[in-house]
Amino acid sequence: MKNHINIIKETKTFLLLWITQSFSSLGSAMTSYALVIWSYTQKGSALITALLMVSSYAPYVLLSIFAGALSDKWNKKITMLVCDSVAALTTIIMLFLLQSGTLQIWHLYVINAVNGLMNTVQQPASEVATTKVLPKKYYQRVGGLRYFSSSLNSVMTPIIATAVLGMAGMGAVIAFDLFTFCIAFGTLALGIRIPEDSNSIETSENLLVSVKKGINYLKQEQGIFNLILFLAAINLVASIYDAAFPAMMLSRNGGSEKVLGLVNAVIGITTFAGSILASFMKTPKSRVSVICNCLLFSMSTENFLLAFGKTPLIWCIGGFLGWIFIPLMSTNLDAIMRLHIPEQMQGRVYSVRNSLQFFTIPIGYFLGGFLVDRVFEPIMTRQPENSIPVQLFGNGKGSGAAFLFFVIAFAGIGVCLYFRQNKHIWELEK
Image 1 (spheres, one colour):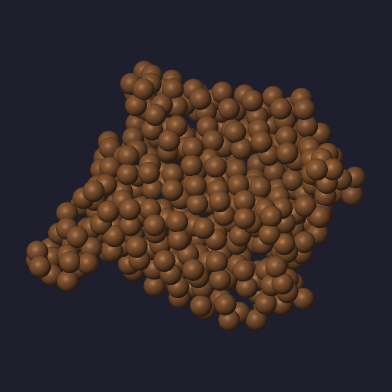
Image 2 (cartoon, rainbow, N blue to C red):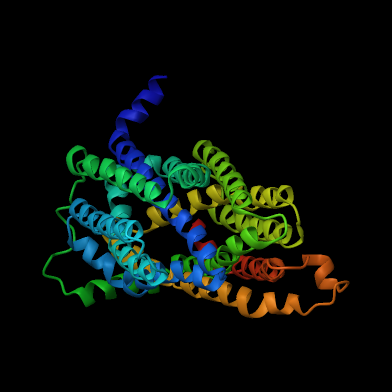
């Protein structure tokens, strides 16, 4: 008990920041979830819905390379507060448009682009802030805690969002989002002190010079660079999955909004359990092995069950197998990054990492939506009733998305096996 009390005392600043920011993330996730349902029911297009995420990630990817350098220059707390305030303002505008009956899909694209821009600067500042308020010996546990909050939000988001949507409509979901923002903003502004490093980057340093330092670091650290490339390839496959997932769940025989919420809730519960496991596990002998094996298991299970399954039970089993070890992977990935990258360089390196690691996400979302709407759904509509594809993936709308899951399963397995042989990644074990 004394040990637990000491842990809480040593990490109380982080815990306060983590809890309030996680609560705010729940509100944001509920809004995003409700907007996916709203946009798909409005247009019935996987591509139009996927473009919501494309518009959010595009500015993030394009400008991240400069954001870390700015983050290293700027006060971390003020940066986080300003970015969150602008994001909240866009939410208020969206609420106004919704209440006035003038909300259009293109409004959401613009709002998501602004929020993506704010997240571009806020994310590296938040990463460095976490490093500054947290003792190094807790990196392993905190990686699990952060995934714990993410998985808990995954559980609660479909449940609460669906309930609030049904009882009070989209406006109530957005209002709850704003309420969670106020809690997080007030706590960060008044209750949390983030120390600023006196040896941090000089404010007079040229922005391009700062960016170049982050790039040069990755050129020298080939292990980190190749690990980032590995994750970029995984993100491409995962974002194609994310684009096709709601389209299949909302339109396939046996699917519905409730089924989408059920499978998402199972995924959330699974990652919740996995994050608890990751938080209490001892440091593994090989973090690289854990990362590779967890991703290979995920890619080898869930996509096939989503492709061949025709009932919510099979889809839920797929969600469990695909996500149970992801928190463990994320925890060890987070620890490798924090332990290998010097604290004074983290903002600049994380920003370059974000551009390299996440540039495949908007590409994947676009490809996923395009492939569902323009390739795989048309292919399935032309299949004879007793053909092999119909027997494997079913018929009607949503069967094309199932076919796509079958294809990306092999793509994900191939990525894992290829990078598992990369000698530079294994050098991170030294």
